[in-house]
Length: 219
Image (cartoon, rainbow, N blue to C red):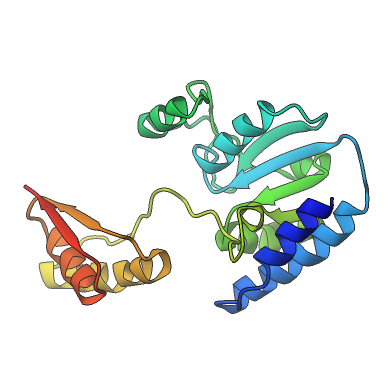
């Protein structure tokens, strides 16, 4: 408990970047203090992300491989059950020693939340949906990323959908540049790799260059 308290305090020292993050930090601090006082030798952990095919599924496998006396499960805020973990994520997990071949997504429910003693969420989207749809279970929520190290709080999804639909080339380029700029600002990548010669190639390359992120082009 002392180690986890030190980790939590260090993770919460950085300034909040937004109102959501400030609320998440406050929620984590409050819940961690209360839950750490339980000193329970066993219980039920549930990891939650959006789709339950990458982050929470992987976290469940890692937790299962570390015997602790706690039962472990995972679920997602997304609407679909039975979705398989993408092959790319399976291969990455396999290289790390974890098998996600049999994982199928499971949508979060009141029953699953009621059965869990601690609910470990990944990001502000999970926080917003939990607060909106299941506010009675917020007292169980902790931010998994807060245990990763000083200044950490969220564990972002490995994939980003900019959700740019149809339109003229100019409309699409403008939407891509605006939304990708936000992604670059949040994640500060070391390199932007673009492929081909489509609208997104040009838009992301320009955005990265303006944000002083090196660009690599693969034809």
